[in-house]
Amino acid sequence: MIKFGHPRLLVDKFSECFLFYLDVIGLKVTWGHENDSYASFANQDEKEVVLALFDRQTMAETVGADHLPMDTEVQDRVALIFNVDDVNIEADRIKSRGTQLVAGPKDFPGWGIRSTYLRDPDGNLLELYTDLAREEWTEGLQEAAKKHGTAD
Image (cartoon, rainbow, N blue to C red):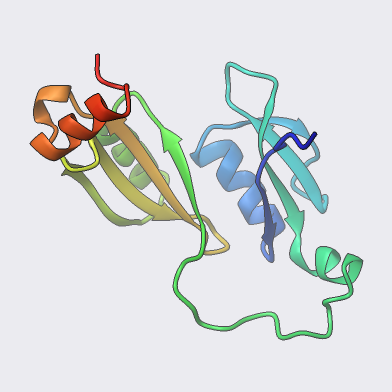
């Protein structure tokens, strides 16, 4: 049996990313420190790991990929998604800490959420979202929720 553990971001700017997920996003450190090469984090109210960071070069050496190029310009291949109580408040808090938003906050009635987007110091894309009230969803989303058994 395979049980999914948690995502691990391979980062070049380990210390900056560690402090970003600790201070800006507000996750709780469960292992490691900013001057290490590995750290794991949990939500503030939980002990279960929800995200880990690992030094990218060390991982490349571990799997024998350190001979490959480190950087190529590509579109995002992953996004970390965080549910928040109020996306507007979180967006203001994040901006007050000097982090630029990529986009938002904006309502997405076809997805049933209001979200904003930002990047961590290594360039990874993050989405912070708040659920919209069901009456704000598009008719198509409401029908899909009924079909999949997730309607209230």
